[in-house]
Length: 139
Image (cartoon, rainbow, N blue to C red; front, side, top):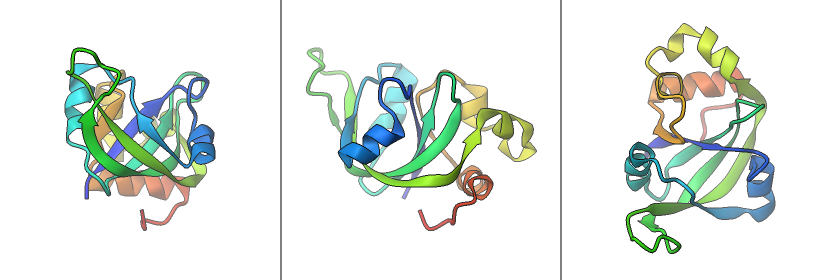
C-alpha cells in the first residue's frame, strides 16, 4: 500500500466537502509530474488531504477506492483521475509552518516542489505527519 498527499483549495473542494459527499472523483490535475504520480495511485492506497491557499495545512485522510483511470472529461485522453473515499479528520491540522520547522521533513516533496498537487509520501514522513496530528498510525 502506497501513501500520497493530495492538495486541494478548500474554497473549491474541501475535506468537509469530501466528508459530505462520502467519495469523489479526484480530477483537475494537469501538471505532468502530478499526473505521473496519479497514474501510480492504486485502490487501497492512503491519501493525506492538504488544504492550500490561506490554510496551508494537512487536515484529513482518505482512501483510494478506484485506481487511476482515464479522465472522462479529457478530450485528448492524456489525463487520469482516481476515486477517493473520505476517511477521518486529523485530530488537529498540521500546518506547513510546522512541517518546515521539523528537520524530519528534510527532502519531503511538499517542501521541495511546493506547487505539486499530488505527491507520494514515504513511511517516515507519513508517520511523522500522523504523530504531529495526534493520530494513530492505523491508516
